[in-house]
Length: 301
Length: 254
Image 1 (tube, each protein chain N blue to C red):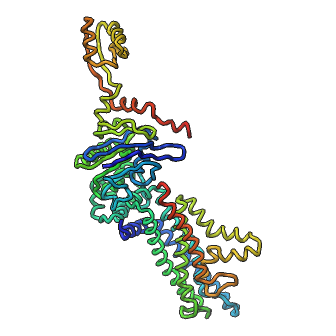
Image 2 (image 1 turned 45 degrees about the vertical axis):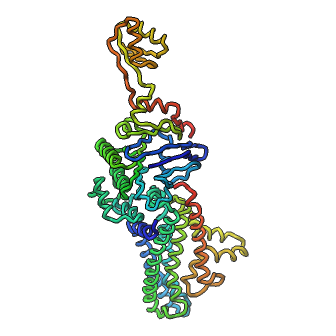
Image 3 (image 1 turned 90 degrees about the horizontal axis):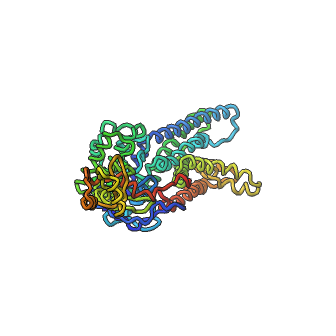
């Protein structure tokens, strides 16, 4: 379990992480979602003690990262890809990390097997493709068989097969009761992988809820109604305070649910050919949540 | 954190990259190659004019002046390459006690440098004296100060390696750290040379190379520091860099 409380990080004038408080619970995949520049990677580095917070704290199973005795056996992390000395073989890269935590070479061979890199173990990591580098990073994270796993943008640069593989792996690790915390700027990916979402924008917490709840809560949910008397129905709905938009011969209504629209039509004797509630995609929900917080850092720079 | 585990890890890192072997090879070629060239020439000179005095031990160890460049550069790179590749974040993720990482890395590197440096120094002495003895100008380890000077050759290489390591840990970027290292090692001396004569003579013996190399000279040159004092001064430069790096390493984001 990961607990962040009022976690903050400022780089000069940029408030990268702004008083973030959240819990990441075991047994499920928690997605850490936000646009580029929202502070996801910085938060990950703060959790791992690589960056020092300018305020607040973050703890793993009740302890700060620096207090962990053998960190690899408690937390596995995949941060940026290719955080590897390109001249070192995959095997030696994993071996030196394993040795620092008292983990033996047998485990190195095991994790190479888990990620499917056994045949490339003696190759220099600098010659690896992006997908292989991701697998190597994941192998390093799994060395200590840790109960907590952090992955920063794990599907970046992977082919569809690799994406499916990592999604399945993360879900099975969570099903084993581990805490899995995965950042991404791809809502579609998170919709498939994450049970729970922590959404950030400009370093601030925007939402912390189950994936299903975030979709349900979105005002991008609407009611679609088709009627031969659509202009009259539209006017009535508008009078009742709903927002109505004509779309491909139907009316898209927000601010009223199916029951309200149906009752209104019945009261005025209006025939209805279709009445359905339309769920927003996570993508739409996300765009709505982060609309005001997208960081236009490029303009500042 | 178990320090022995961290040492083992750092040893794996050092022996598993090619740059270690390349710089080692350059150090061997430089030390032995220059030893042979210098000693053959001096043996020839002595045969022509037997009255000349020279320091036969220092003659055989002349290659260390070139080998130090490779050793110091490797010292820079064992730490700066971790920052350059991002490996440092994996390292600190595995061992959050950053000062322990720095200590283990420094110990492993300096230990390896010392062993190689001593082997090279004694090998160069043996080869050089074999050449010089043809002109009846060879020294032997039994003569006063000679053993200290030959052992000092290895110590000097380890001290220069430590200076490179300290600067690498402090500057963190390979290019910047290499420039700083060569600046401290050579450019500082060139700048000191521009000082007014009275200051210059006071300052020059304390320049890193001038001070440190006294440890592998048998004959003491006028105005130079005593051998162990000189080596101590060189080590102070290294200690200063490492101390600064140690203070900063827990305050900077990795």
